Every structure is written in structure tokens, then in C-alpha cells.
Image (cartoon, rainbow, N blue to C red; front, side, top):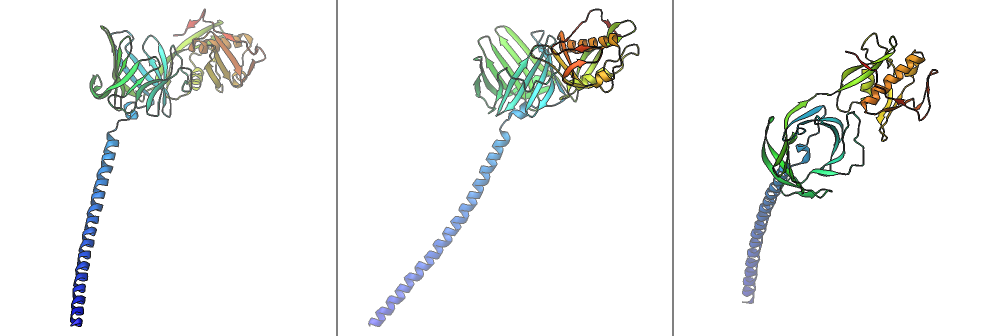
Length: 371
């Protein structure tokens, strides 16, 4: 009897264990299935999250798109409300994310340096009355004015050093221009005198500016973009005529492309023969080692030794040549003094000696224009 009970107990225990084993297998399979579902859901959610991030990155606006920096490009703006509202902009120099622009409104020429850095578009230098061409990308002493700031979305606000408040007030403003209609970012600048509205379009840059003060409204609108073009300047080059003892000048149109070195372009232009009656000032091998307008508003020019070696002139003719140099470069930089050196040493030719600290004075009296 005890054996029967024991056997029944073993059978019962076996059944329970078998039942537990079956249940465990089912539970294990259920967990495995749930795990597979969880993994699939994770992959799906992860993929959706990645797609959302990619979509967000693609739709996020950036300044590079709204302020492209292009070489050999001129932007022409037509204006209303003021005689100087029309102007054109040419990119004289570009280095990395910096661009030096030449802004000509018919009344003056302004050199302005713009830099894209740390999600901001900043004007870091500006100088008026810059009729000459000189690289000012590294110039200092202006301060900094933020024109545009990321994130490029409604409500982004910053305060300028003069207490004006600048805000992005629209990211899809419809702006009509002679070059087309664009969706533009609207930047509103508020001051005590009025407000400015500036509009930036993708792949175009600044397409419109409006100044409003009371009943006064002045606007400038992009009317044309000229690509792959040079900037042209009309420059007077002076030449001696040994036969009549007078100095003549020829007005030449000189072309400069973005990042071309001014002194090299001017040197080549000065070597061109203009009239067989006039003497040459720059010989074939003459080079300008350096040329600039100093802070004292005087011109400093350094030539190589070939300028003297290939001159082949007596004292009177050499004097006229030096006066021609002074007139050409002094007038170009709107200065009345020109300091001339040869390979960074005082000028010494055998006929004429210019001591350190002495200069050539620009003299435009009794000058004759050559037609």
C-alpha cells in the first residue's frame, strides 16, 4: 500500500514537474517573442528618431545659405527715398569666412569687412572714403556689429553696443525684387529714431533694406547680381615728356579681380606704353615690393633696384620720373606725400638722393591730360 502511495506521489510529482517545464517553455518562448518585438520596436523607434533628427538638421536654417561669399561678384541695389539709397557692392578680398566689400553709393566708397563666426554674421571693420584698393581683412579698431545670428528662427534677439535691439521677426517673408520673388529672413532693428528691416534670401544674401522713421521711408532693393566680373577703377598715370619738360597723364581703366594684389596690378599697368612721345616710368623689370597708405595718411612705396638700374636718365629727366611716381600713387591714395625707398633703403641713384624721412610731394599744377 505504501508502495502504491509512493508511486502515485512520484507520478503526481512528475506531472507537476512536467507541467512546470511546459509552462516554463511557454514563458520562455513568450519572453523571447516579446524580446524580438521589443527589439523591432526599438529599431523602428530608433530609425524614426534618426529620421526626425536628420529631417530637423535638413530643415534647420544656417547663415552660410543666407549670406554666400562669392568671389568676382557684384551686387547692384536700386534705391528710393534718398539719392544715396542706390549702391553697388563688390567683394574685393576673401579669406576663409571673411569678406571685404567695396560699397559705392555714388557719394563715397566704404570698405566693410564681414565675418561669419560661431553662428553669427558680424561686421568687424568699416572705413569710409576708401577710394583706393587695399586689403583690410586684418584691420582692427572698429568693434563688432552682429548683423544676423543663429538660430535663424522667429524671436532670436540681440542688443547692439549702441543699445539698438535686433530681432528675427520672420523666416519666410515674401519679398519681390527685380531679380525675382524670394522667401526671406526678416531682421528688424529698433532704435529711438526709427527701425530698419533687412531681408536675407537663400543663396542670394541681402536682397532688401528698408529704413522707416515717421513719414520717411528709404529702401534699397537688389536689382542684379553680376558674377565672374572684375571691379574697374579709372586711375591717372603720369608720364614725363623730356622734349617740352612737362608731365602728362593718361586716365586708364584698370581691372581688379577678387584677391588680386593691388601693387602688382598697378605696376603692370604702369609699364604699358601709352605714347611714343612720353617716357616710360616703370621699366620692364621694375617691381613694387610694397605699397600702402599709412596711418599718417601718407603713401609708402618700395621699389626694387631695377627701377634705378634701367632708368638711363640724367638728373632733369630723373626728377620728372620721380614726380610722375609721386603724382600717380599720391593721387591714387588721395595723399599729398609719397615716401619712396629702394629695397627698403633710402633712394640713391647717383644724381638724386632722398634721405630717410624725406618725401616726394605730389604736384598737379601745369599737368596736361593726354587724350
